[in-house]
Image (cartoon, rainbow, N blue to C red; front, side):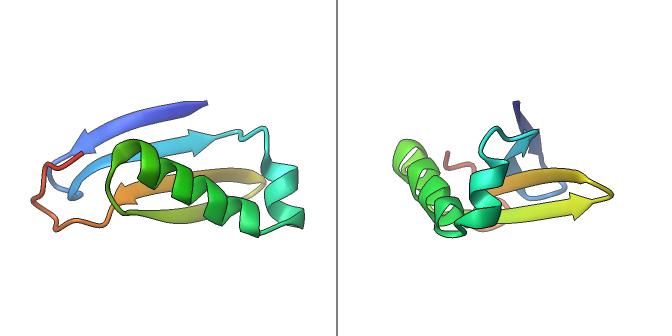
Amino acid sequence: MSQFAYNHQDGGPRILECHSPILNLLDRYPIVGRLEQDMFETVLRTKVRRQMMRNSGYTSAHFTSRHSRRSDKW
């Protein structure tokens, strides 16, 4: 499940991906995470930063634009 959020205080647009169906692949083959990031960059036509969060069995991936904090380019 994915969620799009835009927060001016946090620096702009963000895609939050929870309960990823490819989590097992990500654990076994880390290159899959890089390929997923490349896919987002191609679709959105901008550089993105991918950050994995793991907390008490809950795993999520956050994709944020690498543009400046005030940029609205998505």
